[in-house]
Image (cartoon, rainbow, N blue to C red; front, side, top):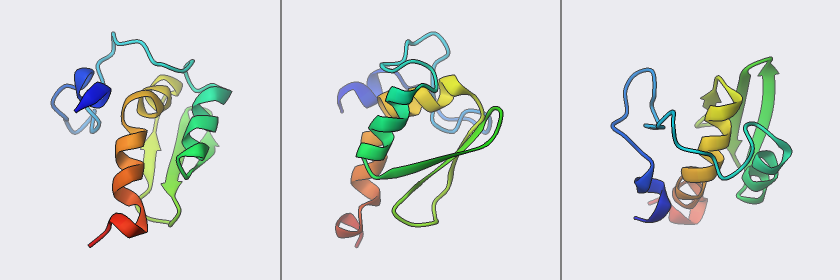
Length: 93
């Protein structure tokens, strides 16, 4: 459905979200706009190391780990809205 599936490939152990390396992000890699968009969707993003971010959505679990600014920007661009909709408490059954 929509943009989330247009830029995805099969998930692997090293690429759980199925990001394609040659697809541009809608936001600059790891920049302020990506963080603002994620916060707007209800995510908290903490930088725990130079190239390591942890995102959570209203609760401690699940934790989503990102190991590059590009990976974080691509999540914000193509997957965050999908995850936010499914992680909201009112959508859980």
